[in-house]
Every structure is written in C-alpha cells, then in structure tokens.
Amino acid sequence: MKDVSPPPVLELHWVSHAYRSGPRPIPALARVHVQVAAGEFVCIVGPSGSGKTTLLRIAGGLLRPETGQVLLDGEPLTGPHPAIGFVFQRTNLMPWRTVLDNVLLPLELQGPIGPPEREKALHLLETVGLAEFADAYPAQLSGGMAQRVALVRTLIRDPEVLLLDEPFGALDALTRERLNLELLALHARYRPTVLMVTHSIEEAVLLADRVWVLGGQPGRMVAQVPVDLPRPRNVAVVAQKSFGQLALRIRELLGLVQEAPRRGVGHPPGGR
Image (cartoon, rainbow, N blue to C red):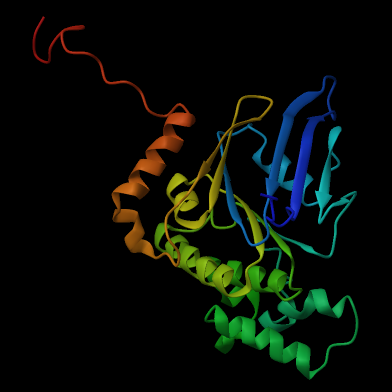
C-alpha cells in the first residue's frame, strides 16, 4: 500500500557544526539526521555541551551547519525565515514600549498597524491571561508574565514552526508549571510545529509527542523517544505510571540511573 503520510515540515539531513572562534575548533554537533511532522511537538534534552541550542539554531536558520542541510517544507533553509518563530530564555522586551506595543512590534516592522492587528494582539494576550496588562510596561511584569508576552509576540506572526530555547528555565517551579499548561493549550489551539530545548525531563514528557535525547561532545542523537500519552494533557498525567516510565527511560538514556549495589558486595550498613 502506498504511503500517504504528509511530508515533514522540517528536516535536518546529517547536520554537523563546530565553533571556530578560538585557536582550535570546538565540535558541537555531529551528523544529526531528524524530521519533524506538521503540528508535532518535539522536546530536546541532553547534558550541557551536547549541542541542544546549536541544533535549535541550525533548525531556525540562525546558524549555518558546516555539513549537512536543513529543509523547510522541502526547500533548503539558508537563513532566518518568516515561517519560523524563535522564543529565547531572555524575553528581550523593549522597556519603553507597552505590552501591546511589544507584541505588535513584529507586525509593525512589516507595515502599518491598524485595528485588525491590534484586535489580534489583544486576543492573543487574552488567551494567555494578560489582556488587562496591555498598557503596562515590562518593568511592571513578573518573569512569567514577561515570558508570556514574548511568546505572544512570536505567535502574532502565525509561525509554521515555533522554536523555544529553554524559555521557562529562569522561572520558579509553580510559574513554570502554569506556563507549561498554557503552552499545551496554545499548541492545541494553533497547532504550530514546535521544537523546544529543556533541561527538565518531566517538562519534556508532559509537553512532547517525541523527546530527542542528545549526548556526547560533540552532540549526537542518542534516541528519539515517542511519548504516547493521550492529549489533551494536564498536570494529572504526571501521576500516571506510564509518565514515570517514560521519564525513567529518558534518564536511563542520559546515564542518570545507576544500578543499585548488589547484596553482599561491600560492607553492610553499621557493619565491618
């Protein structure tokens, strides 16, 4: 039977990269070959130095791979593209602009702003619970609120692909959990294709359809772990046995699970 599955939105064909700012090149990524389907949510985990952010920047056209090729909708990606939105850990909001004006900035750079654009921005702010802060300034926002504004500023351009580089890493645990739930709701509503770097295994399992596990220096693809938990998801899924098994599997792939010492090896507690 002929395969009728849709073509991937984003493809990385055997991409490698090394940084060459010093006397010797520092290999960061080695021969990664992956594909991402339309509407898929993929999280990237791995230890520091395994090339997670390098992979994300290559996928977004912000960094040219030394070898290999990136395809967006089947076409070579040679630089930043309007179909790709990027959210960094730092919000980079302009302090002299209101929340609404910060959200409208990407559209303002493309042309005049009218009532339809303002209505769209206010609707997105309402979606993340910030409509009443439209006239506030970044200094008046909490860290979580500022990150929501940065996310809305990216979504207002209707990106086909959304790239997130540890966007909630600097936030406290409760705020991070709330934003994870809001991100799940936004993904369900707008269905962008998402690639997200995170250091939290639980966050990756909660959000993703697949988790890419990177390891080594230079970074290589250790495994791609499917997350077959049903959607829509909420925090209750964390208590499910299948959630814990997936998180444990990823920890094993990262080498974080050590085998317990066998009985009779070494000294027993309190003995000699």
